[in-house]
Length: 185
Ligand SMILES: CC(C)(COP(=O)(O)OP(=O)(O)OC[C@H]1O[C@@H](n2cnc3c(N)ncnc32)[C@H](O)[C@@H]1OP(=O)(O)O)[C@@H](O)C(=O)NCCC(=O)NCCS
Image 1 (tube, helix red, strand yellow):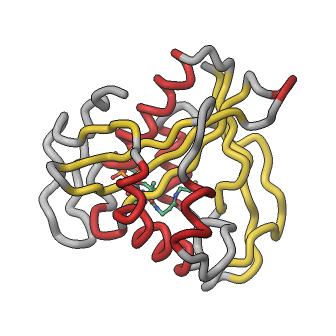
Image 2 (cartoon, helix red, strand yellow; image 1 turned 90 degrees about the horizontal axis):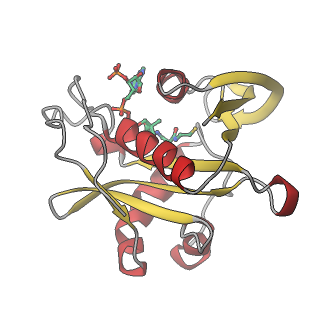
């Protein structure tokens, strides 16, 4: 648990809110009681069909265990006052002899995107993985048309190692590539 780094949002979000003031977004460990507030934006993001390979139409009970990590992994929420505005999950990318490489997933409520929440969660994950002794972080499946995510991860020090062609069936663009993105710690 801990405070995030300054969020640093500089644009108006899609909902027209003012950018977050740096330091306003708190990132903390998620509790079971947080899941009902995460599930609506989890399902909206999955249903949009543009960023994640989770199956369509997962119920809250089906999706909860897929997002809420158990040790050695961790799920966190980004909180603005009493409102959960985003979430991330992190942990080893592979078990056993691959477990020194971390991975993570991120979802920011569409009504709160573009205001620095994703950046705050990304910085939290890097600090968590470094503190936990991981050597690097690998994102396995960043949709190549997801310009917001690709730009954000590059700004946090990740590079594209490779792109698996036509690996994602995008709701607008059809078959597009999935980037493997990576940074050392
Ligand atoms: C990707 C996601 C996590 C980013 O979170 P966010 O809170 O919207 O992003 P931030 O406001 O922190 O933006 C940080 C950076 O991301 C990039 N970014 C964010 N929104 C963007 C947009 N609409 N277009 C281009 N770049 C964008 C920019 O580099 C931005 O930095 P800047 O403010 O200096 O320009 C969020 O949009 C999201 O949850 N999307 C749906 C799910 C998803 O794609 N998850 C990641 C899968 S790899």
